[in-house]
Structure formats: C-alpha cells, structure tokens
Length: 97
Image (cartoon, rainbow, N blue to C red; front, side):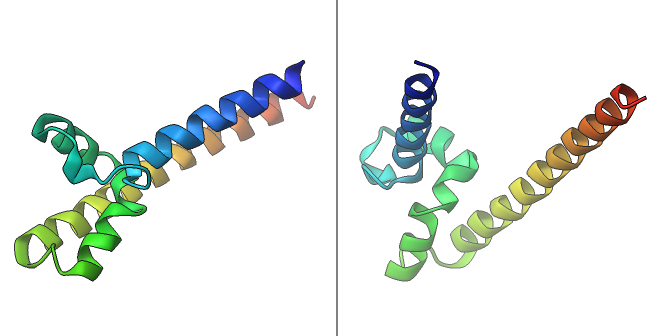
C-alpha cells in the first residue's frame, strides 16, 4: 500500500512541476496574475524560459530579468540545501554516540 502512496505523490508532484514549468500549458495562456506568480518561482526556468529565449520572445531587459531570477533561485536553493545538509549531519552525529 505504501508504494502506491509514494507513486501517487510522485505523480502529483510531477504534474505540478509540469504545469508550473509550462510543459503542459504555455504560461502565456494563464491570466496575468497567475503568470506573474508562476514566473516568480523557479519552475518556469525549466521549460518556458529557455523556449521563449529560443523563440526570441525574451530579449533585452526581459532576458536579463529572467536570467537574474534564475541566479537568485540558485543562491536561495543552494543555501537551503546547505542548511538542511548541516542539520542532517548534526542530527546524524548526535545520534551516533
């Protein structure tokens, strides 16, 4: 039963990423408010942003803004990963005595 739960959760997560990255529906089809929210998160950097760059739809300041946002998310997620790693190591070392 647990394997089904894991698979279902994994499918829900993948569908969410596909939706928010523009893989299922282009982000330009969403209302402006949702576009702004979706474009703020890193998911659009997976498919939508590279596609728009390739098609020449992002140029100049829009391109710089999109790439800068990717750098910001890399920094945020790297810091979060480092924090989680340190907490895990601390927990592992304290339980190993």
